[in-house]
Length: 176
Image 1 (cartoon, rainbow, N blue to C red):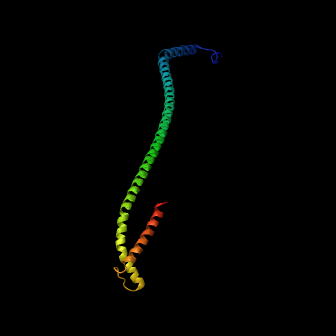
Image 2: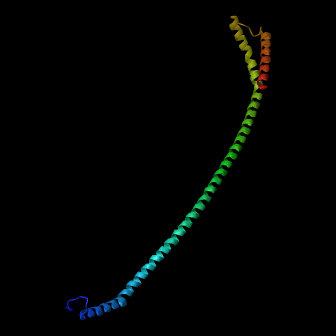
């Protein structure tokens, strides 16, 4: 009856227990150390990778901050250069405007001198042709031919009166 009870140990139990302890010793002595070494090595590699990742993340964050500072400096420099360019362009416009005004003044003065120089010549040319024009106009108004030689005094009086009116008109035009 005792032989069928499982709780009571017999000799096979002790043999199996001794074999289990031997196998456990062999596993602990030769198999477990390389596995444990590989696990430790793997754990060290993971820790090293995590440390390197943290360092790279910190470095990337620092570089990002430096990039922001450099970018802001570049924007400030660009703003300064744009403002300087605008200022320089305004100065160039003012210089060009002043030069154009001076050139305009010189050209107006030169044109006025030319007109002043040519006015007497034009007046003489007009006076030479006016007697013919007066005779033609009088002939048309009267309907009869007019002789220039006979009416020379009358023509000269009309020309003198016309010259006086033109001089008065020219004086009013120049005054303003």
